Image 1: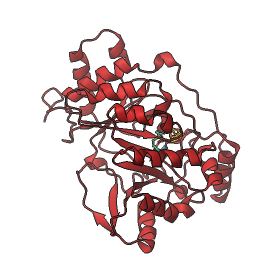
Image 2: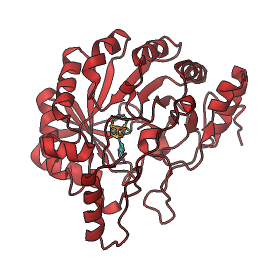
Image 3: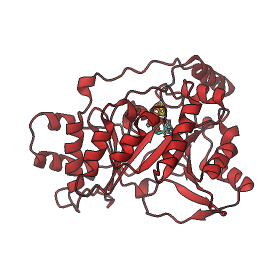
Image 4: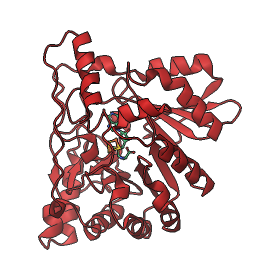
Length: 358
Ligand code: SAM
Ligand code: SF4
């Protein structure tokens, strides 16, 4: 029987070694995605209709998300220190996310400082793309090369229904600019939800193919603030790929590393790639090497954890690095074997995706 103290780097009790840290730099967002921070009339109507169709009488009221006070959000210095310590223990890949990370002023400076940390080999950023054009060059100059955008619809009305904002053209322009500036890869995430945007699946594949972009189709996960998720709204990865295969000439690509979240297919004519992230129907917990630091300095060992581990306290109380190293090793050792979506005893965590960082 091992122990966290003897563990190599950040190893858990199941032998998984952590290499990937996702950092949410803010819980705030300028969008109100229906599957994340729903608060519009349209979102409310969608969920009400789905619930009525499913025979449920308890329609969900959408409750506005209370942003965390700024004093509770980690400073860039605190994030950088935590990242340096984690890198010393084997973390190599960083994804900056949120909330909307481009709302955090000075984000390019954070990226450039994280890139300079010894051991960090890869820094990526996930954004809804609305503000990207304003910061694109700064981000590039800071050394960011990997960009992931979120785009769930190519129809202006449906885009507004899904995000709560008018902004389709801004996001499309951002994606094009990222390609022009040479960000590589440029990926686009789309959450596919039954009766909402599932009719756009093939158009979104064609969009990626036209631009030679990696499209990532994500199953809707129970991480919405309204807790209105229902299994019936999930289009499974199997269903998505069956449909895509019947319209496009694609072939499966072997995983580039065992902890990859997406199963990937490439267009046989070389025009881009399609990935499926089937976290609900085909969880990939056995290979999970990811940790998540929330905007307020809590470490989560799983998207669906019910327990968080407070690192903000140590980062603010004058603790030496060794105390943080010891805490980190102990927390990682206790990482859960996997999540329980689909099990009868699954309980949705209180924190939303916007806080955890997707
Ligand atoms: N605001 C940025 C954005 O939307 O790209 C970054 C943060 S967002 C939480 C990161 C990713 O999580 C997005 O691609 C979003 O589509 C995804 N996401 C959010 N809520 C989700 C849910 N309930 N199920 C599946 N994916 C979700
Ligand atoms: Fe904001 Fe991203 Fe959540 Fe949409 S998915 S509400 S853009 S944090």
